Length: 355
Image (cartoon, rainbow, N blue to C red; front, side, top):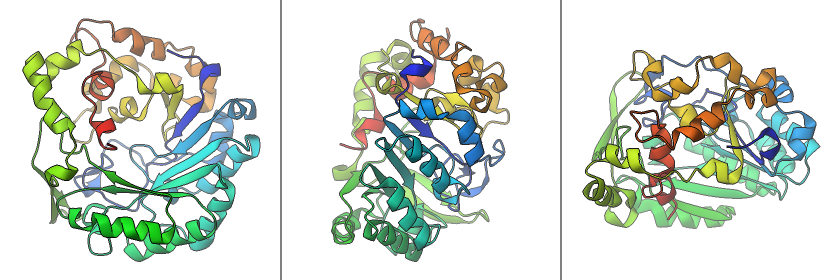
């Protein structure tokens, strides 16, 4: 699939911690309580020094922090980790996805200095003062505004990503105008793929709850103008193949991370191809998370621990095993289904978010 010396991009999940409780995030159960299968792991600066030696950092083009379960701004060593990468590769691109609701102004000014012109923050803000918290539960608007403006005013490059639901679609133009006024370089109208379920079924709405289990916002699809086009393409796929599962069995894989020579590091320090393969490891609705197919490729989690030597993970054969599975006749025969779901050639809800 690729070799240690081929890697050009690191996707780093620095923490499983977050101050928010977004109801469609696997970190929590629809907004209530923490996923029982995670331990709120977090990588320290020393962990990253062990995983990423200076010579490896010098071969990289990009390092970005995002992940599946946490927000980088609540991690203790996020700034120091970015400084470490920058010190060994002044010309690489650094970026981060965040809800913007934590840390103080000085921290954000320091981040802008570390990033310089070779970096950007993607601010995930899904509404304005009266609506952002309906999905970004627990995120305080005043903190978002203060931190975004501190970062941008200090010279930081910013993009505002706006997930569109029924409850915030009326504010898209107002939010875009605000983004321009604050100095964001780009405003992304993000057509969420969250209304396609884990078993590839459509759903009309999603009931959020808060940390006490009380029902809060019913999240509904936006109007056709802002609808993820994969929802309609799904009907075409089913007509062609008979079912989504039949499509996944047959789908040619166009692997995004293989094309980009990108590697994902989890907050546990595990090296996997991407956030999607790692994201199948700890689904909260399973009593035993190891019923997920990805565990067939991970007989011993310890051998994927990049803190023991990232290059050693490449010797385990996991990347080749995943790639070789794509040639198998069906997912039941061992083809890794998540690869078909996320990188199948004919159906891509992720890419459709940005069109």
